Amino acid sequence: MAEKFFKYVIVGGGVAAGYAAREFVKLGLKSGELAIISKEAVAPYERPALSKAYLFPEGAARLPGFHTSVGSGGERQLPEWYSEKGIELILSTEVVKAEIATKTLTSAQGTTFKFDTLIIATGSTVIKLSDFGVQGADAKGIFYLREIDEADALVSAIKSKPEGTAVIVGGGYIGLELAAVLNINKYKVKMVYPEPWCMPRLFTADIAAFYEGYYKGKGVEIIKGTVATGFGTDEHGNVKIVKLKDGRELEADIVVVGVGARPLTGLFKGQLEEEKGGIKTDGFFRTSAPDVYAVGDLVTFPMKIYGDIRRVEHVDHARKSAAQAVQAIKAKEEGKSIEEYEYLPYFYSRSFDLSWQFYGDNVGEAVIFGDNNPAIPKAKFGSYWIKDGRVVGVFLENGTPEENKAIAKVARVQPLVESKEVLIKEGLAFASKI
Image (tube, rainbow, N blue to C red; front, side, top):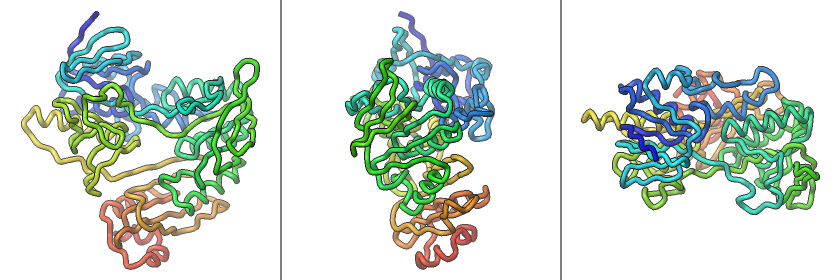
């Protein structure tokens, strides 16, 4: 079978791949040096669009509108951009075997790719209900959302059943964003999740109360404390019923599942050191093997600000870790040094006319400020997390760009605070004066 050689290979064609390519071009890249191998059929794109504007009933986002790197205000990298820069974009190609010792990758088609330096950017894959043996989980009309073909299938389903009924399984990021966008599509929406409130990995009960109240006000029904245990179908295999553990049965034309993701590390099992479910790297995203780097969702890396190691599933980290790895590769070649990765955890979401941002660490005691009454138009409220007398994390709904910069600074500086009463009283003013 055919064999190809590239100085640099990026395996995976998501957000991180697009930003890594941009950084290579910025730092100097010769034609033919870099290849990106992706199982998707399209050039790297800004994945967050899929759960937001891609599903809008009007004015929906479509490619080429959201190719990387428009998400951070950069150039739109169309397929032609890669050609012009001498980058080989190898699409619809799944790597099925990796041999780190011989620096060889093999595709499903049998092509082998040799490299000098590898960047692993395979990201994550969705956790499916079929992984748990849920009865009927392979029915038609049950959707997951990670890649653009899955989004296209969901768009088709929405259009084929106008003003239908949707059940969202999961109360995290995907669950909340999809519940909103299906509601905007005039669907009757029910959310089902086992936790006592939505987004429990980040939200406190006080924060969650606002969003749950807001969604209920929009007509979204929220069912907590139970899980989907099975699905009923019609004679054509289309989902019609969602069976819950508590015995209830919900009608559904569409089911969207968002119950988490797992890092795609399987190609490298036993070849690279792993920790906390991800491929372990240093602050330059070097793995345990020479000339092999890993970035984005699938890496466990030193979180310098907190003195520990973590894995972060977020587009902001995917972008920044990709740039850091490329800078480290080029610095090594040139005999230079760069600073270790200094990442401040950052998460955000937009749904309906809501928009929140969070920076830092949600540990310690949380206090809420502002008015989190969901009935108030354009409500502005937030939360501080205090640990060992310092503010270590900040959340803000409906912040201005200046206010969001201010809360990010607080999370990075971690100022001392006299008491939680001071934070409650001063609210956002505390952040603005740091």
